[in-house]
Image (cartoon, rainbow, N blue to C red; front, side, top):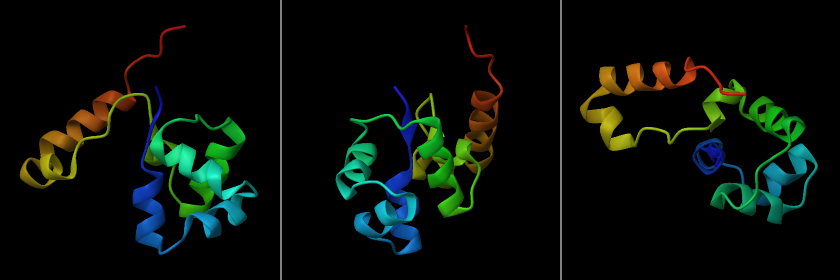
Length: 93
């Protein structure tokens, strides 16, 4: 299952679901489905979303769970290493 941080980035940027949907040319319901994890975006949509937030797509989507905010605050170096390690794990084909 693909994990994402769309809601976090959207709220931080002050966008409504409707605003974000308009920016990437989808229905606002699609943004809701993405945020709840009930819909996996196409590569094109993932890239468009990352472009709106001006972050690499890996900052927005992951195949592993993102570290919690609490773990990042209490153990920032460990959380950063875990995230870096997860990004560099080989993908099975």
